[in-house]
Image (spheres, rainbow, N blue to C red):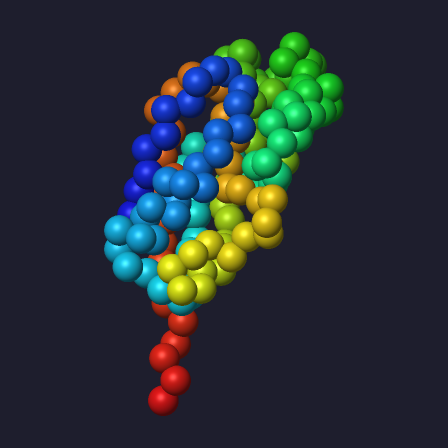
Amino acid sequence: MLELTIQTPQREALVDVTAQVQGVLRNHEFQDGMLVLFCPHTTAGLTINENADSTVVRDILATLQRLVPRQGDYQHAEGNSDAHVKASLLGSDLRVLVEEGRLLLGIWQGVFLAEFDGPRSRKIWLKWFPSPRPA
């Protein structure tokens, strides 16, 4: 298993980690297969979305803030209940196909770490599954 460490900049942010993930593929000479990414935190998650227009990121964060307000009627009393809910909505894992050492993403897509209780140092665990070789 491989690991990335990402320092998030503020309480809520979508941090584009596409280049770091692509760097892992390059450094380990991974070619064809599938990469699984997992976020081992309960107040952060992972998503794939547009990375060409920063207003998309702002829209996603603003919509999540409207849907899951920071000050809600939560039973969890640590002050970060909204972060747990938002992380659950996005999810903690991704699977991305890899071909010839490159992430197979759409032209406008990027891989994001979604921070909802930062700033913090976050981990992303990566597991590589190579494609079977033809007999």
